[in-house]
Image (spheres, rainbow, N blue to C red):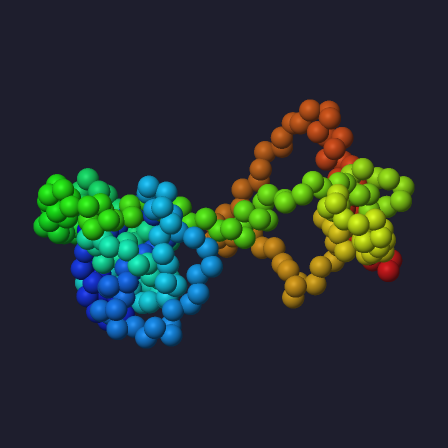
Length: 270
């Protein structure tokens, strides 16, 4: 689906709406025509991969105001685009992040994109002429680098991969010298012996900062954190029917309630 949208107060044609894209893309030739200063580009330290697995050069990211629809039925949002240097028949690609910010629902079959506005439902129709022009260009046998856009994206955050996958084996260290197996921390197994000893000593001295259950952090200041139920005050409250649990679950529930009550009692004494 190909649409027109307003980017930074300029009309950008040939924008591909791609539900399979995990990033919003602005091609460099379109970025130059919008005349956004180069110093607004922020560094982009990860990689962007195309459909064929090749790495796509990224010049940086830039946040721009995007409008779709016509007044008064229009939607707008600040969208962060990745500016890429690649040849494409499109000017930009509106991926899932941008569609979520604009709160759109897309139907490729109907070639329409709809969204909610304060004045009612707005819609944008796909430009079938531009879609056919691209399809015709592709059938002429031109090289894929000249006509084939990046249709699917996998934005791979290397930092996230590093957080999820440890680079070395980890070993469990009890926080207490009693050897409580439920209260442990994990440290690198390849650390030097002197560093490991000092680290374990430091962790045990500061074991009170680790919270394993709600009873470990009673009486939190509401200024720091507070939990509220998202309940409509105009709705009539309904009493929940009593549920019957197995004896094992009933025992676990009683033990948990007793722990919470005991923690509150100790806090009141202090």
